[in-house]
Length: 627
Image 1 (cartoon, rainbow, N blue to C red):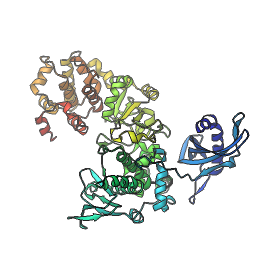
Image 2: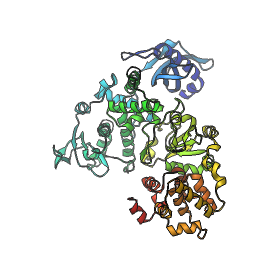
Image 3: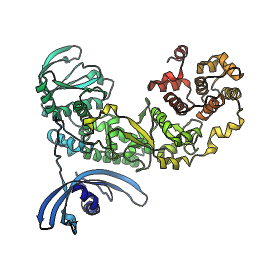
Image 4: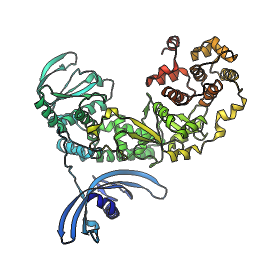
C-alpha cells in the first residue's frame, strides 16, 4: 500500500508539504536566530509506512508517514543568487481518507505534522544493527541524545572527555599492531599500554568498555584524526556491544575489535559492516547535521561581515577555503572529514576546495550552485582517466584533437578564455566557472544506488574494501563543453604545417625548438634528461635507427612537448598507440596527463600510483636525479 500511495498520491502529499513549508518554515524562528528564508525547493518525498486509523464499510482513514528532503534558501529568485541555504530531511505524518473506488484525499494542511521519528532498530542474526546511509544521521542523533544532548541544541565542539565519562569508558594509549589505530575491549583481558610519560610500557588488566588508542600513529596526523578515532571506538561500544558479547559466549578468545586504517583487513562480514558503520557515524556525531548547517550559516555571515566592515577581499574559491578551514577547526575535525560532511548537508560548492589527487592538492575552483548532482565531480585522477580512455571515444578523440586539456586534474576545454597557454594552467576565470568549461563525471561505486545511498543490506553481502570507484562522463554536458573548443588556439594545429613529414626531421625540429626555448642546451643535456643515449639520439635524427615507442615518449617528455606533438612523433615512427591493453592505456594517459612537466616530474607522479616501471628508466638516471 505504501508503493500505491507513493505512485498515485505524490502530488497531493507534495502540495500539502508546500503549504506546510510556506506557513511553518519560511521566516522561521529557530534557535534564537531568525532565518529569513524566502525560497524553498522540495527535492524528494518518500512514503515510509501507512498507519490505518479507521475502517467503516468502504471508507478508510489512515496516516501517511513520509520522509521529505527539501531546501530552504535566502536569495534573489530573479537573478538566481543564493545567500544562505540549508537542506533538511524530516519525517512527517499526513492524514488521508476516502475509498478505494472514489480515491483518497488529504485533509487540510493543518493535518500535516512533523514527527520526531525514532527509527525502529533492525538487527542482523548476529545482533549487528542494520543501518542504511540515509538513516545514519538519525542514529547519530540517538547516540548524542543519550550522552551529549547539548551539542544538538547549540553548535559546539564535542567534549570527548565528558562523553567518555558518561559512557563509563576507560582509555589508554598503547602500542598497537601495524595499521591498527584503535581497539575496543568487550570482555576482561590483559593489554600492553604506555606508562603516563609514554616512554615505557606495562601490562594491565582491562575491563569491558576499555579503549586503546595508538597515539604514535596520530603524531603525524591532525587533531581531527585523533578525535575521530575516539568516536569510532565509542560507536563500537554503544552500537555493537551485543554482537561481541554474543561472540565471546561462543568463543572466549574474542575479547576486542581492532580498527584498521585500511578496509581490507576483515575476514568476517559482520565486522566489516560494523567498521563501515563506525567510519560513517563518527563524523556525523562530531558534526551533527542541524548544528553543522547552522554553524556553516554563521561562518558564512561572519566572513561576509569581514568583507563589508574590514575590507577583507576574497575570491569565491578563497571564501570557500576559509569556510572549510574555520568549519573544521570549530568542530575539531580534519578538513577532509569537514568537506565530506558539508557535501552531505547540501553544500556542493565545497567540492572545489581541498582536493588531494594523485598525491598533491589541486588548485581550488568554484562553480554555479546546482551544477553538480549527487555522486558527480569535476575531478578525475590519472588512473581513472586511463580507464576512461578505453571506454569513451568522445573524450579520447577530443584529447587527441586537443579540444580538451588535462589540467588541474580536470578535463578543460581548449580555449584561451579558460587556459593560460604560457603557464599551461587554468585561467582565474576558468577556476571561478568550472561548470562552464570542465567536464562533469558521474561517480559509480559498487553497492551504492543511484541516490548515493547504500542499500540496507548491501554491507551484509559485499566488501567495502573491494568497492571500485568508476567515473563516467556526463555525455550531454561533455558535448556542450567540447563545442566551445577553439581549434585555432591549438598550438599543434597552428604549427603542424612547419613540421617535417618524417620522424627524423620532426625530432630535429623539436630538438632545435627546445634549444631555442631554453628547455635543453645540447644533445648531452637531452640525453641526461630523457635517459636516451647521446649517440642514439643522433642516430634517430640522422634517420639511421628506428626508435622504440618508449624512447619517443621519453624524448617528448624531456623536451616538454604537449600531447599532440608526442602522438605525431609516434605516428611518424610507425609506433601509433592503440588502447587494447592496460599498459598502452596508461602510457596514453601519461602523455595527456603530464604535458610539459618533464620526464622527472612524470616519473614522480607515476611512482605515486606504482606505475613508474612503464618509463623503463635506468638506475643511472634515477641516481643522477635523486629519485
